[in-house]
Length: 433
Image (cartoon, rainbow, N blue to C red; front, side, top):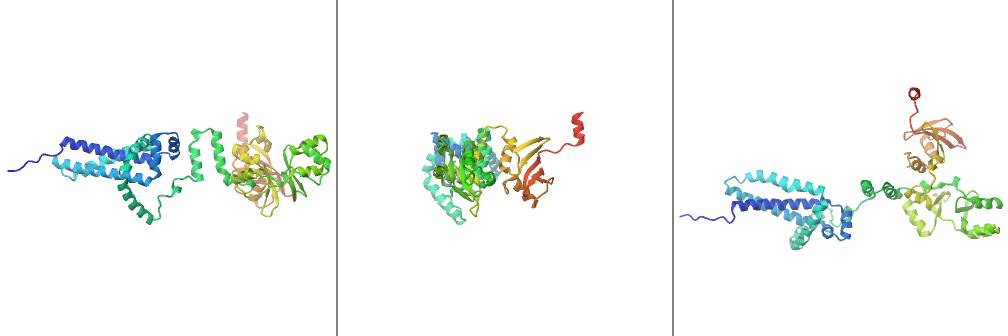
């Protein structure tokens, strides 16, 4: 006589367990994507503000190998359990166990993988923070098993030279940080975004790029008549002037006019008093990056430096104002400043001095002349032609047609730059009609 065995779980209970395990699998899959995709910097800000879920998520992500080990352990356990229970359910219903693969695979793929991961990728914070509240105590409960699994996995990774302690994998380089600033454009005012991008560019710009060339330095020549020197001090638009002899071959110091103005007003200023008021000259190499020079100005308590080349010859000067202008833009209130650099002659033609700094032209006129080589317009044209041009010569650089207007002593003094195509006779006739 046979003995009838009563099943431990009813068919309805098995179905309920399979559904519950698929939901758990969806939780593990979605929360993994959410925690890995959550913005680390926004997470850190929320954690500092006291958000409990953000604090726990930050702690979990500090050891990502442990977190991933816990998630994969839980996900695999529930998937295996769901497959096992589904097989038992198939046998009870008289269905071939092999059919479980064809039924359960799309169910897990769609409902436990694709759908939850898609939602988590779109809304990582709303899933990551609640999940962290569950994972944090669960990690401590399963820590011994997770530790063993991670020890084996990390040992295998070490054989391939991969270290889980490499912090450079999560840090941003300058290009990635620049991209992050661009992507945050809708969160920042345009002026703030521009300043942040300019700060990031400081390491690629040298003092040579922004210096006032030697020929344009306004300084005091001690070989000039004393009355001319006094007049220069009275009328100087600058507060600091280099004091030199022999066209800057010998720079004796830098004079802050504030120190001599009282003596100038009393009429007792002489050369000895002027020398006693001077500061020693401060020299800086022409290839010094601006971010480093900003720190050097601060450390040396200076606001102006003399730029020298590899031979020690003075090439120009750089002031703190020049450097700050690279970050915040031009510090002058004159709205016609761009026109003083490039004089509008009409029909898209601008007359520019050959000594004009290319970076200043680009910034003031919103042009895109190349800045990788020569620093002045004269140097850019000579670099392109590889010869001294004649007046009237034409050259096209980076899409800008240029006409040499005037030269003196083999130096290009004036250039006409066309910013748009010249109108044809047909276009002029059509405009006048």
